[in-house]
Image (cartoon, rainbow, N blue to C red):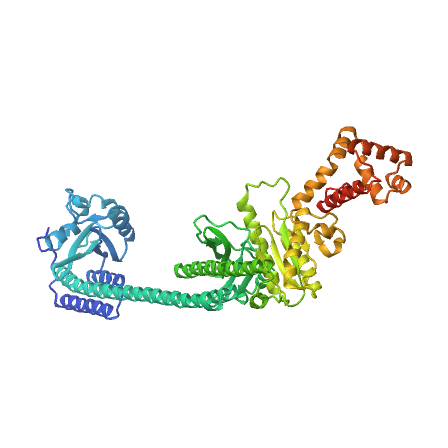
Length: 631
């Protein structure tokens, strides 16, 4: 019902009117000051509720604003009864939409645009949901005045009264004027607040865009530096330095799958607790398996090495893992920084591809040169061959030796595992090439089908021994490579010496000379055996030895005798019975008996020169091949 109806008490005293006018002016001034202070909307709501209560002089006042869901919620309160505010906001919010149920006074005020006076809240059907809360707070009446500005409904100014209290018509008029002023004040503050929020949002957006621009510029600048590493510096150390400088982190770039893998580090000083662990090699990703897609891997912090969390990206070349690029720092890496690390891994793969291409070109050139050396004839222009050797780093005018390295097949080797053998041979030539490159000597490494050849100055034997020892140590450290056969040829003093000396060394390699020291056969130390190494067909030598000893070997196997061993010792003792018997720990008559059995089986006699020479050659071949029995 409208507040201007019957039952309103009129206070016509001049003093009361003056006081109310002053109170209204003071209230308007407070609102103006609140707006002028650039207050938050909540402060204006609270000020409006406080001014309304001061004008009434008793009870409570509330500012109910329409929220985005179309509900009236208390945004400002003054006086007792705050529990009622919780009921209105949380338990029984007032919907301004038509729900078909009795409307609360505040909703009616909004819909009619006029003030609504309710002298008894218990009798108003629209207050049924809140009547118990009103009673608990000692409130029995209420007046609702709409708040609007620019023809837009904002909410309601509502005052609550205890029993026996009600506003006079003048005070109601002042409340209505206050509501109009308050609506304008609220509208101004809300608009200003929204404008400020838009400014803040724009500033935040601008900062975000600025960071994105800075990040992209960082990515572009870093890309340029990475390209410099790829095309100019071409080193893993340069790659690590770029990451450490651009990302302010500790960077580790490590190779994988090499006989002598290289690890580059930079920025270790940025992690004061971890540089020793990095320098000692305790921080590594070599043992990790990358994700099949090559995605980056997040690294958890490690208290054992004092390393913080980090990011590791695998470097993949045609699906093969060539290394890891890992970065560590106390703060996490954002999307753009992660892209930089991923780009660094791509650069590492490109460097590996370039190194492979360069190695393959170098190997092809050295192979062609060595083939030319092996094909030297009487009409060959030696100066051209020598000049080409000098361009590759070897001087054929000085005495050189040939060193052959070959990985021997494992026990139970499967010939069908060609890919595995090829990978091991690639590791071998890579390792040999590295050691040759590190040596100050004028040497060259040549990759052949299943072995590696090194042409090395003969007068630097210590360097050759060091090369052999270091290579054997490195190859033993590579899994699945247990046996490395090595042959050192006789000295090549003329270009024409290379072909026969290489063939002799290759024959020694294929026959696996027994008794070699540390797996190394030195052809000059073989004496008379070296004559046999010049045979064109090592397999013919082996066949000759097998045919010669076949009958005696078969007889010994079937009868448990030692005729073949007795004959070999007898020939080594130059046909003397006593020394032969002493070495075999038998009587001289036993030796004579065994020799007679040899004659019966073979049809020849050990004292016959042709017979003795044939078997001595067979025994020498077996010794070269490593199949002779130990005596």
